Length: 315
Image 1 (cartoon, rainbow, N blue to C red):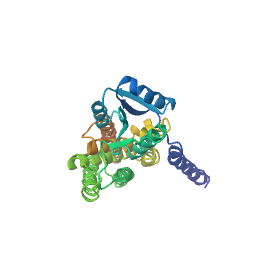
Image 2 (cartoon, one colour):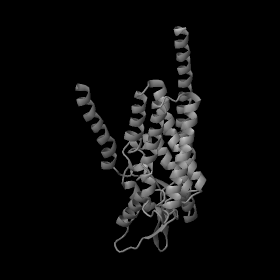
Image 3 (cartoon, rainbow, N blue to C red):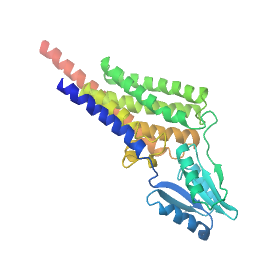
Image 4 (tube, rainbow, N blue to C red):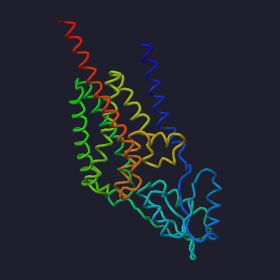
């Protein structure tokens, strides 16, 4: 009774901290943006951005073409191009609608009174999801699907190679179903269909393999530990609905090393940016999936060893 009375408030406090703290402290922190134009012309813009200490990480480019390339390569979220006719703002709502709106508000507030700021969305969200909410909403279902798959495999007593096969097969099917819903039906993704399905499958496998692997080593407590790390920490720290650079430190960094954050970043890259910036999140998901499957296989070997010892003792 005492354990339950203490545990439930502790879990609630952890959940409120994990979800409410990042939301309450959302602000730009070393947000990479670009300025482009002649050095003398962009100096004033740089000074205005640097006045907000720690908010922006300013990258300078010679011309608009270089700034556009940096946005498309996911090196920066947007760019301020200083021209003879005034400043122009280049954004990428596909990278983060929240950041695109934030940059527009910031540049408009700093512009001279009455000045008209031209805004161009270089990499826009698809027409089926103009606000980019579907991609953000897909992170939690993928995490829950992974936790459910890992828990079911464990509770059904599947071990070793059979468990690994079921985890991979379930993740592949989840990826196909999720791509069919988000891409084909809702029109929220705009990349290669099979690549997106593979990313969604890998995101699910990273979670399910980790949960099943922890359970193979720690028993059923591993299910709770895996669910806690992925759902209560990984989901709110993912930054998918805003951007990792808008979360308080170290939440944004931690979130990108967990499957939900890495999966959301990778899905953005393959869906809207032709794979730019995909290497690190893909490696993160592969490490989670590979480590989890190794633990599952080792757990199967240990289980067979224990079964053999019991048979010998009975004989």
